[in-house]
Length: 259
Image (cartoon, rainbow, N blue to C red; front, side, top):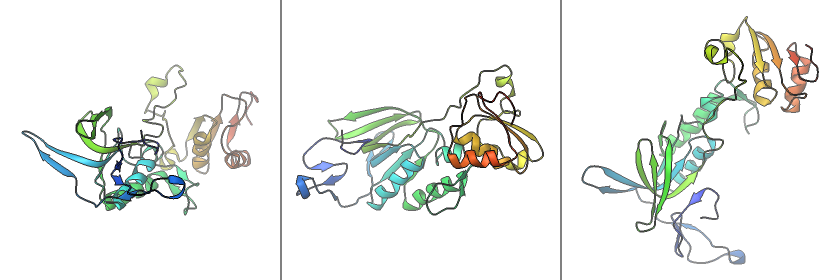
């Protein structure tokens, strides 16, 4: 296992994730040098063309796409696999969420930020494949490579980076009568759509950042009620202060009453 978290590589004395180190630097630490860039090697088998990628990245969210940016700057052939869509939860779960804590933006919508990550990776020449779930990672010592099996086939790579974050999102259910029947018919998991919420009564359940941001995102266009099943809010202090200063009705386990 590499000293780089999440990177698998063939152990040896001369190579490391596509690098060689002829000498050592300060305190004996190895100095890594990128080998001369080359296109992915292609083996022509009887039935299929097999590409051996320099780097295969599992997960095409912000972390995986950022990793692809740097591997492509080193001219390493790079393949990203994502079980859902590229852009991670920004694209699949929070497309309408305003992101306030990303440097260089006062705020940016989740879908736009996710698209920026994807566009840059594409511009750098990384290959992205969506809706391809990885089921197995296996080292092939004889061939000096790593085999990655997915729901759509098998890939070969010199190194693998695992950048799955929290993984595919499964929303937390409240397990109350009618929940399953109303899913998608007025009951949703994720940020509310501002346009679709105009003039409506919106009930939001939760007390973390996502719930607080959801309530704040539609407070100017809808009649919003926020319910938290614990006795205190768990989101950022700035969000809590905005909620308290707004016309949003709130209820926690401690209050047992509308405020």
